[in-house]
Image (cartoon, rainbow, N blue to C red):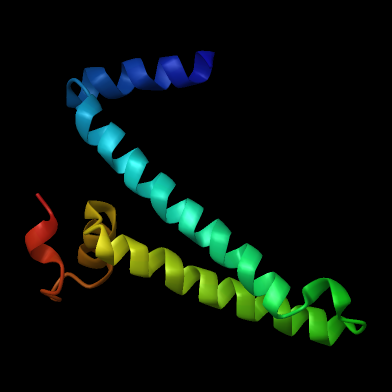
Length: 105
């Protein structure tokens, strides 16, 4: 907690006050995306019968499938919520792509 407060003070000295409303909105979007991802993990682990797999390869494939599907769910929810963080990520990694650029402020 002390380190966080020190970093917060350093950040505010360098970049100015933090926009707490924007931070709260971002955290709520990330929370919704994370809950959807956790829900899909639970569903697909049971659909793939992860705990019933006898062989390591079967467990690895069930886990890999669950991770891939859950990531797709996370990013689908991010697109539905028009996540500004996803738009910023897209702009950093593909600066010439115009798919989500209009969402970045």
